[in-house]
Image 1 (spheres, rainbow, N blue to C red):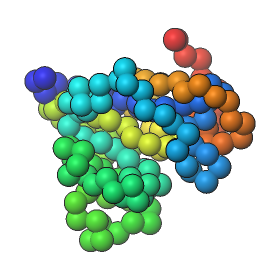
Image 2 (spheres, rainbow, N blue to C red; image 1 turned 90 degrees about the horizontal axis):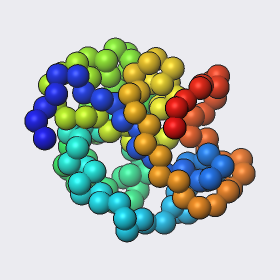
Image 3 (tube, rainbow, N blue to C red; image 1 turned 30 degrees about the vertical axis):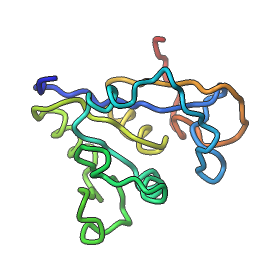
Image 4 (cartoon, rainbow, N blue to C red; image 1 turned 135 degrees about the vertical axis):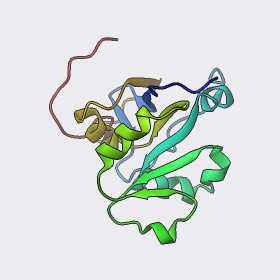
Length: 157
């Protein structure tokens, strides 16, 4: 896939039937693998992942590294120090501006990976181009919402 002048920021996430993406402590062990999804093909559509701190730390805890992902990884965090995480780019201010500039660069689409807080803030800033939900059977009550906080939005499905 050739690079595009306007890259899409795509939020691709698994969600329960009642709209939750994480358990009360951030766990995602309830998400079962879907053999119909070709993850290798999906990941080839991206050359950059934008990740929030919680998702980045969960990724590291599971033994995943940015080099395993085969793409550049940008972590939005106000607490992580760039010198402690040399394999990724840490953004601790100007997230909106940084993502807008990234979208204007030549390249593949950008994967917004992880939780609802970063998604919600980038959605509110008008930067999310596409939301791709994989709905997992089950309803779990008051867990981590797909779009934490903020006003309701009208969407087309």
